[in-house]
Structures are given as structure tokens and as C-alpha cells.
Length: 112
Image (cartoon, rainbow, N blue to C red):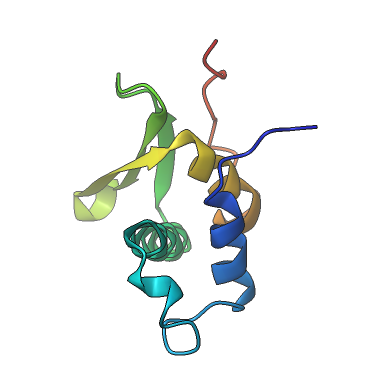
């Protein structure tokens, strides 16, 4: 059985639309749920950025254990955005939110 981070299920709930702040007000009192909600909104924003023509993204190791940096660039507009994403959320983003096919998106090898 594959062990996953406990907040990955929250990301799936947000993505399915099964969890909202209005319908689950009590759950959003938990700081971990609010952090995961902010992360989900950031991941959705990255997906919208990548839908723009001429945008490219790279996944790079930023030296912090447990996370990666997503670097989004639009050279024509001199736009660059760097978002630090936990490893457990990167897999969700690549599977559910990243536009496909992305030939320029290469995930680094998993850490030992």
C-alpha cells in the first residue's frame, strides 16, 4: 500500500468541489485545512498561468527537503514566478491540474 500525505485527500476534495468554506465552516477552523486550501488555490493559479501561450515551467530542487520549486516563465513579457510546492502536493498538481501535454515539464528524480 502506498503511503500518502494526509492532506492529499483534502486536495482531492477541493478539486472535486466537495469541500467549500461555506458548507464546511467548522472544518476551515483548522489551520491545516486553511493552509491546504491556500495551496490548492496557488496550484490552480499555476495551471491558469501555464494555459497562456509562450509560458514554460520547470521543476527544480531548491535545497529544502520535502519540496520543489516550480518556476513559471514567460520570456516575452519578462515574467517569472517561483512557487515552492511540497513534494506531496507536486504529484497532485502534475496529475490533476498541470495542462497536458507538457513536453517542457520534467520532474526531477525522486529523492532517496
